[in-house]
Length: 293
Image (cartoon, rainbow, N blue to C red; front, side, top):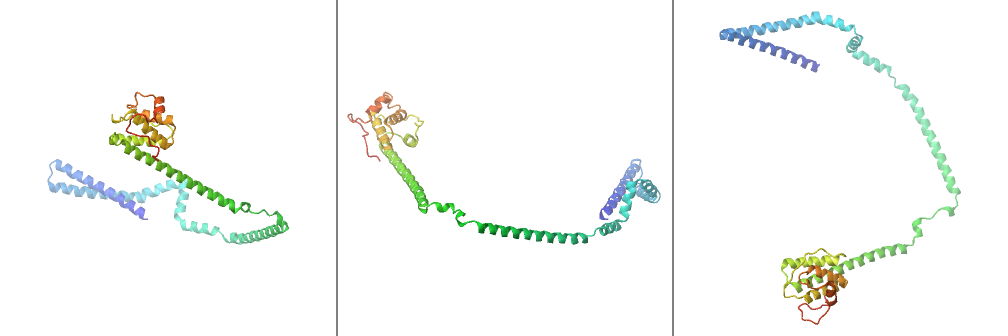
């Protein structure tokens, strides 16, 4: 009902708005032809009244004459006639539908089925339980398998856990010793070469030494140029000292210092450096040191 009322109000507003627009246009027309202001407003009112009267008369004619005629024409179609009958008697139709539904037989028939099903289920479960009890009673006690965890002695479990703990402790101790060794070599490097390298070069050398110790492959380096006070034998002694502390092969250490101190060792071959690393005959600033670590 509310929706239908809103539709009627909207329709009337549109019609009366159209009538008002026509009246305004009529007023503007008479003003254009030279009529005075009063006459133009009079024309506006007259046009509005006439158009409103025409609209109301058309509404009455449509409701009294045209609407029944159109409805008779539509009633010839079966779909429209059925729709009209349903719209006129919605309540009676709803009551007839409700009366056709009888829920009592459904309830009366479902209850015995539920009871029968429950009784059958109880009987089956009782039989299965009794049969299973008889089967369990008939089995000899020797056939019952013991728990698998009982076959493993508790001492073995304790030994496994102790082994894992010991292994973890050993790995931690090895890591600690390795880090301590590296720290000592880095401290030795800084203390030995601080007078012959600037800060940037010294830090870069420490990075190379760390990578050389931690990696199995030769690190990529950029040659470092030391002060001219250090001779070839000094660099050889430095290489031998850190290689001895790290436990690296002599040839590997030789290759490392040859790459790092390429400018100082430019005139020495790797075989020569490897052979003379531990020589002490000549005068030098960096001595051999077997007790770095």
